[in-house]
Every structure is written in structure tokens, then in C-alpha cells.
Image (tube, rainbow, N blue to C red):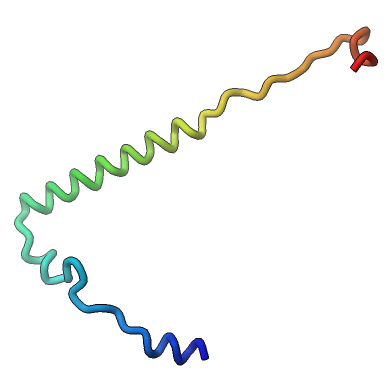
Length: 70
């Protein structure tokens, strides 16, 4: 059944920009897209770096006298 569904599945040709459209882009447009891609990558890395720096866990230090109280 799954094989039949996969066999019927067809991707749309041309989509937003087909491969021919990429080949016809000017070098200036390609540079602009590359710059946008790099800026996005840097923003994602910056966000992920901030979220991974969690504050250190607090530790409770009890002396021998305080240990049995709690």
C-alpha cells in the first residue's frame, strides 16, 4: 500500500525557482543570496549560542552540623 502511494506521488516541476532559474541569475544576485544566507547562518548560531549558555546549577553545601537538620 505504501509503495503504491509513493509511486503515485509526483513533485511539482518548476516550483518557486527551478534549476534553470538559478543558472540564469546574475552574479550580483547570487552574491546577494549568499550574503543573506551567511547572515541567516550567523543569526542562528548567535541565538543557539546564547541559549546553550545556561547559568551554572546552584549547589547546596551543608556542614556536618547542618546535614541532619534537612
